[in-house]
Image (tube, rainbow, N blue to C red):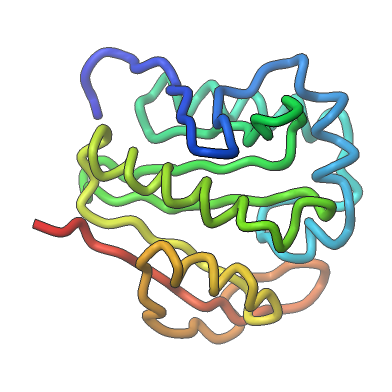
Length: 182
């Protein structure tokens, strides 16, 4: 992962295209990611979500790519080319592991898109980025995300009590992980 800068990939599944983010995504991004329900299920998405937040996110995506520290991709529906969410891996190269993160806009919940996208990105992490381990964390009040992680082969590894601080309170975090099969 520390060789020449890799261009962020475009990954395709039966129903989705996952491709690099661009400035043209901001008008669709803000109303989708800006819903309180989306922010409430994630650690790093602020609410309200502003144009400045979107610009900072795109800078972060470029830095991840430039430093070969993983990948951040927009999730696009194949059928109508609509943005429905985002997904990515942020790696720690010396440990050959990465954190998986994803979100979907509320209209796209419960349709299997998160599972489909996460499976493709985990496969990319193991096959292309040569990671050994991929992990993810969820809030216990978001069991749907735990089901996504279990469907893609991750195992619940435990709970970190009052591990994160968001919206002026502490939250527990459930940890999940998967190790590359030999």
